[in-house]
Length: 301
Image (cartoon, rainbow, N blue to C red; front, side, top):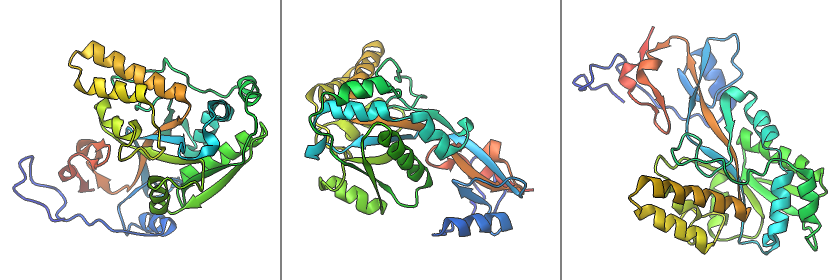
């Protein structure tokens, strides 16, 4: 990208910006340390180097979901037993190493949303409730969890989930696969796995999240079908009174939690590694999706 010298916010301080695709993460980290590239998303472990780590809110929600197209997970008692067996904090501290880089998630909305509520079933780890719900399950199947290969955070979360469930007598098999293949299988309703890990950034307005959970929607990868939840999203999309709209979407958050299908794990901060010779980061402002709000403010020291 070449700078536009007539940019209305002022002439950019760097004449050219190159976006380089490096397929191997270790090679990309090495290139960053050598100064061959100046910025890398999802960088860490650069203590005592020429690289600074910048963490900023991304409004992303990472989650674990049941695949409701599978006949093996139709018993809500099984689903609740699984959720109460999971340890969200262990999953996040293992994946992100420090609370500086994440906030535990309890809702399908990010905590920064004006509609967010924690007045719902959070599914904090509770072994007594695990036993209670498992006692109502006639036969506990072996479950399979799919996640994106080479996603370090998901790999850690999957292994912690496996350990959590093993401790209560539930076998969880792990299946790492290519992300495109995973979502292709989900769209087609494959029964190869019963759970999967994912994440999304859907913006500010809560109506945007309908496509993830309303019956038959494009990104309803868990194949959830619940008319009361569908109705809440439909009513919320057209309600013009702020207080009523707030109540509708808080009811939607509680309804989804009660269904024990979607288990929010984390609202993580994005990590950006920058070589120390890059200045103007605060002025350029780190934001979700686009990384920098105004790249013209960056410069080399």
